[in-house]
Length: 371
Image (cartoon, rainbow, N blue to C red; front, side, top):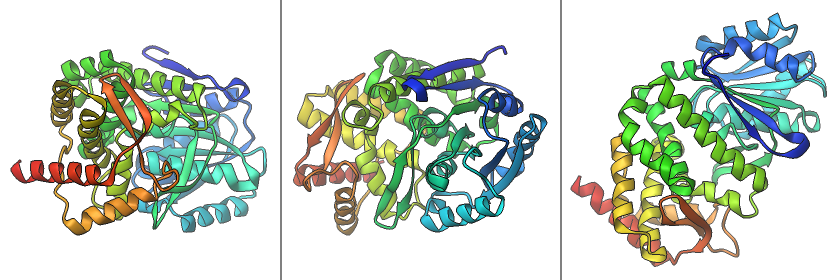
């Protein structure tokens, strides 16, 4: 197929392909058949994606001989909970899915995380296919095998590493994405430039207008590049013992912002946009990250129309600090940050004093009040 790109995630016998291009939903059934997946499957989607893409996906699967059960969950981060996981288990059992069946996630990061966790745990694990329909899920959450759900205490505190058999990114699905959701996905795209690739970052600076207009040629190559970076990192460190932690740049404060606002005020990308600005300020203070690079990062997030500041009350700052203590990367009670030495190079495991975190949060709040 023309304009289709493929990226391999190198994990030995569990290696898989990320396929990126237009009009790929109609190829879902054929691709799944090529993988010799079981005859029965469950498509898990949400109530926003279902009316748009469930029918062509299911038609493609049925045309390739699969028996399909459709499971629809409410859209939004609040659906990543154990109650809905239980509901999915019940529907899988009612449909008599067996060990050789598979689960297909059709939707954004919430659907992928929840469906992946269901697949990882139902009958001690069934095959799993990702069909991400948002920019954020195509460049980040659908790749690498991190699946899970939230607890009231924090994000993704229950989960597993469980790799998909295939990731299919149909660029056409991005055309129906609300503008706010599309821009939120750009936060993860920008992150890849900061953590790994200065040339990608420079391309984003020069091409942001075309990306916002969803120029297919530019967008396809950008998504493929992000997937290549993540595939390289996951292939080298699947279980996050070292290198993979760099993918959490901006996420320590970003996840805490999501938690204290009960996953309803900010989209994930908006929260980690603010988190990446905070991480840049900390990087300048602790890792000699150049001030001019901080300004480039801030300018690029602003060009992408993403938030770069947020005013916190004293009470919110205290809640944020407590939420960070529940972060999965906390060790011996110490919050650890991924910080940058320059654009394109970061390192994990930096312990930051609480008073410095407070100072950065206050600085971001002051910038918010000035804007």
